[in-house]
Amino acid sequence: MEPALQRLVVVSNRLPVALKREEDGWKLKQGSGGLVTAMAPVLRNRGGMWIGWSGAAEPEEGAGGGTVGGTDMETLFADFTEEAGYELCTVPLTEEEVDGYYYGFSNEIVWPLFHDLQSRCRFHPRYWRTYLDVNFKFAEVVARRSSPEDYIWIQDYHLMHQAFFLKSMGVRRNTGFFLHIPFPPPDIFMKLPWRAKLIQALTEFDLVGFQTVQDRRNFVGSLHRLMPEARVEGRGAVVTVHMGNRSFRAGAFPISIDYTQFSEMAARPEVVQKTVDLKEALRHRKIILGVDRLDYTKGIPERIRSIQTLLRRYPDLQGTVNFIQIAVPSREEVGEYKELRTEIERLVGRVNGEFSFPGWVPVHYHYRSLPHDDLVAYYAAADVGLVTPLRDGMNLVAKEYCACNNKGDGVLVLSEFAGAAAQLQRHAYLVNPYDVEGIAKALHRALHWPLEERKAHMSRLREQIRRNNIFRWVDSFLRAGIAKSLEDFPEVET
Ligand code: GDG
Image 1 (cartoon, rainbow, N blue to C red):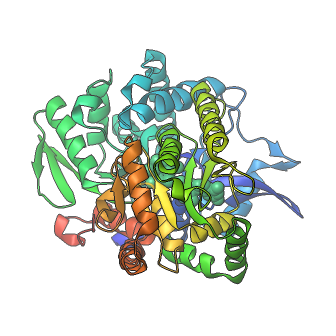
Image 2: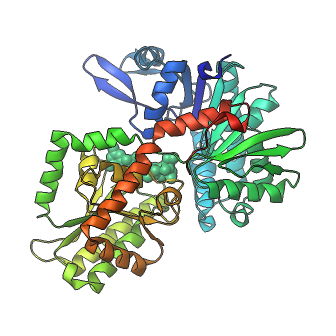
Image 3: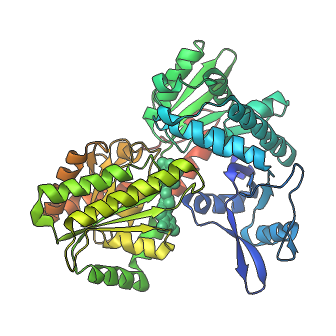
C-alpha cells in the first residue's frame, strides 16, 4: 500500500472530544488543543480512528455505552464521525483502573520522575500492576479495531506498553510512540523500580519520538545501561537502534502550534479590541504574563517570588508594571495540587500586600481557564512572556505567546529547562527557573530593552515557530514512521 494512504489510528489516554449541549440536543465536539487540530485533517484525509478513554470512570467492568440526555452514545459517536470524518473508539475504565493507572502510575510516578522530581514519586507496586492491566486492555482494543495496514500512533507516557502487548498477542502493526514530557537523565530514570521492563517496552515500538535531542540522548543513555546489547547508528535528529536481530528508530520531533491560527486570531478586530481594553484597564502599564496549567512542574511559586524580588530591587518599577498569572485548574482532586494552589494564593497575597497602593495592584491572578480568544488577547497585550517551568517537555505557551505578538516588540523570558529552549534559545532570554534573582534581573533588562533589539529577536522567534509548526511536526513524525530508510525523509529542525 502507498504509505501516504495508510490509515491512521491515534491512541491516547483521553479522547479529544467533549460533550456539548446544542439546540438539537447533546453533541460530541472535537477539542481545540494543538494535537487534535493537527491530527484532524490527517485523520480525515487518510480515514482513521482515535482510541482513548472517555474521561469518566465506568461504575463496573464491562459497562460503557450509556446515554446522555436520552441519546445513546453510539448515536453520538456516529454523528461525530459523520461531521469530523474519523471514528472514535472508547476504552471503558473502572474507577479502580483510573485510580491505579491514571492517578497512580501516570501522575504519581511517571509525571514527577520524568520531570526530575523523584522525591514526589510514590512507587506503589499496585500502580504498576494496574498500569500494565490497563495497557493490556488498550492494546486489545487497538488489536481488534485496527488492521495490519494501519499506522498506529500512540501518544504519551500513559501508554508506553502498547507495542509490547500487541507483540505479545502476536499482533503485527507498524507502531510509533511520542513522549510529550521530557525523558529524564539515566541517574533519575534508574530510580524507577520497573526501569528494565519499561525501557524494554519502549524498544518494541518501530519509532520512539521525543521532544528534544537531549531527551533522545537521555533515553539512549538509560538503554545502554539496562540493555547493553543496544547499538546506536546515526547522529542526526533520528537514529536507528539495533537490538540483536531487530531494530527501531528513536528521534527528536519538537512539537509546535498552529502558528497561523494564533497569529490570525490575534489580528481579528474583536480580539484587537479585547487587547486594547485590557491595556486600558491596566492604564497602559507594562504587562508581564504567565500562563500555565496549575502544576508543580511549572515553577509558579518561584515566578511570583521573582516578581517580589523585581519590585524590591527596582523600586522605580512599582506602579509601572503588572504581572498577570493565568493558572488553569488541573488535577484538582489531588492533594498536592490543592496545596500548590494554596501556596500560590498565599504568595500572591503576600506580594500584593507588600506593594499595592490605591490604583495599583502588582499581581493579577486568575485561577480559571479562559476562552481561547481571551487568552490570545492576553498574549497580544503582554510586553513580556514569562515562561519558567522547572522542567517541561516542550511548553507551547512560549510558542503561542510569540505567534500572537504581531507587533513583534515583545520579549520571551524562557526557562532553560523547557524543551522549547532547544529551539528558541538564541532569541529568547534564557533563565534558570530556580534562580529568583536571576529572573528578576532578566525581567528588568527585558523591560528596558531597546525596541530595535526586541523586534529583531521577536521576528526570528516568530519565523522559527511559523516554519516549524504543528503540521510539520505531524508530517515529520509520520514520514519517519512510514519511511523505509532514514534517507526517505527530510531532517527535522531541532
Ligand atoms: C504537555 C507537556 C508539551 C493554557 N491556559 C489556557 C489554555 N491553555 C493552553 C495553552 C497551551 C496548553 O494549554 C498548555 O500546553 P503546554 O505545552 O504549555 O503544557 P502541558 O499542558 O503541560 O502539555 C508540554 C505539551 O504536552 C505538548 O506536547 O509542550 O511540555 O507538559 O496550548 O494555550 N487554553 C485556553 N484557556 C486558558 O486559560 N483555552
